[in-house]
Length: 221
Ligand SMILES: [Zn+2]
Image (spheres, rainbow, N blue to C red):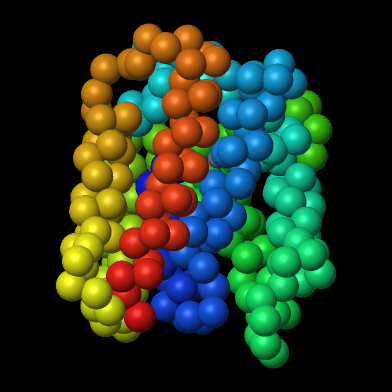
């Protein structure tokens, strides 16, 4: 899953305003950030195969460190410790925010589970693999991601108000760009950037989204 992960950010931000959208944008994609970084480092592996699945041309070959269910839980605990002990928010809500950041990290695994074909290992690469396989259906995949992202975004918009006129539609523009990008990745041609080029493009995209979300959330209160 790609943009659907960001639905969790808007829902959590709506639930607890002390959380930061910018940090949530990193948290929900932490597993993919790890994955693409480990691919560049030569530790995890995927290949690009035209028409591998209806909605994805990424054939995952090895990713237990970033995407096994056990590793995902450990990354979520890591996020909890980070936000509880190293960079806690000021005030009495540090524990709640740390729990929400951990949930944001683990939500990635659950949403991936819906779309991946059974390639998500329980622990090691040769252990049982899970995945419901919605990526076998391109339109269903795009609609599902768009629906959850837009629903959570509407919740966020309804429960915040414009603080500065300048940039009041900025977050909406970001969401529209995401919807278009997701349509391109699902229905568009394969990107001939090579595995490393694809990985670096993905990492940069995730970081730019997080940076923009951190900026744009200041326009709303
Ligand atoms: Zn993933």
